[in-house]
Amino acid sequence: PAFSLQLLFPMSCAMLQASTPSRQARPATHNYARFISTRARARGFVRTSATASVGNSTPQQQVPASDPLNDLLACPVCFQPVQRGVGKNKAWTCTPCALSYPDKGTFAEMVLESNASVDGGAEQGRGTYAEQRILGTTTFERPQVSFAYERGWRQSFSWAGFPGADREYAMASEFLETTPSGPFLDLSCGSGLFTRRFASSGKWSPVVAADFSEAMLSETAERMRAESTSGVKLVRADARRLPFRSACFAAIHAGAAIHCWPQPELCVAEVARTLKPGGMFVGSTFLTPLSRLGQFLGDDSAVAPIEQLAGDQLWGGRGEYKFWTERELRDVCARAGLKDFRCTRDQQYIMFCAVKGDPTV
Image 1 (tube, rainbow, N blue to C red):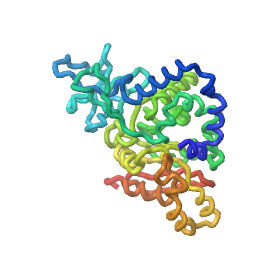
Image 2: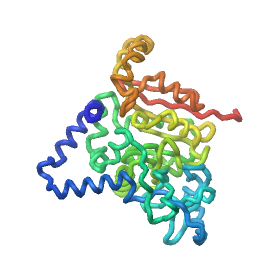
Image 3: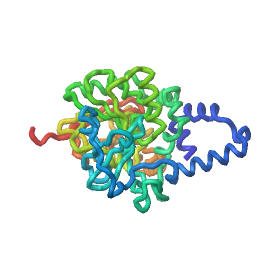
Image 4: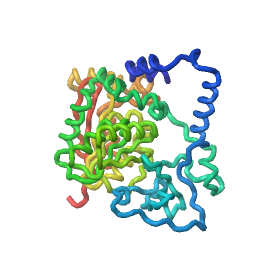
């Protein structure tokens, strides 16, 4: 895993290694405390996610309709609308499932994460079960990575042909130019690099920034405060089970994200479910190294046999990160009912878009 991470983010890994104290410099008590804290978080003994509601509890008042999340959030178990309490208890509650999802102040906590509390006791945490996570997920849960993301990490993607945030935003906006305005989801938002740009455009309202990483959501919130960005709601979400109602977003963006997603086919299906008819999905990711040769030859099919033979072993077909071919991206969008696939490529960088079909047209 460390070797694959260095291949994908060589500059970023070097920067993190340089800024991280050596093991020898850390007191033994520090290492032990850090180990216990990390394991506790991983096993669910520190943070409580969704908890089973107590049967005799007082019904919650509904939050005023002015909160835009009222029209968007859904239970990630049944996809039914959730209601938010007011006063001291501002949790989002699903009545059919008898589950409540806490509001962390900065963001709404809307992931499964062994959500039902053990034996129905709200104080018992999320239990002992924890999903196994791949490096593509766990890497971005680290505070060091969220801190470094816009301080060199993201800029290092230039080795693959990524043109930089401003140009990438302009390219995405060109794809989205004919898409009607409305609610907008920046999925796997990271540090809010593009969230802030889309929010400032004035076209989309509300803008929802969603990520599985709490560290990234905290970084997004800090940068939004620093830049006085408004009109954004933050949600912790699993891309495989998006906590949003069906057909609620006019557009969904996922910048440099799909290569990190576990079960990307399911994630794209969730994107399609939550898009309105006629809504657009825009994403960017890494192509395989052989895509450079395919682009040079003007024909990806010329390198397809080599891709099929060696792709799984050489560049993450079954590994921690998934390097894509254009054909694979076309396929995964088509399987989810997303049509009119278009893309722009440069070296190992691709930005693509596809549209959810409108049955009325």
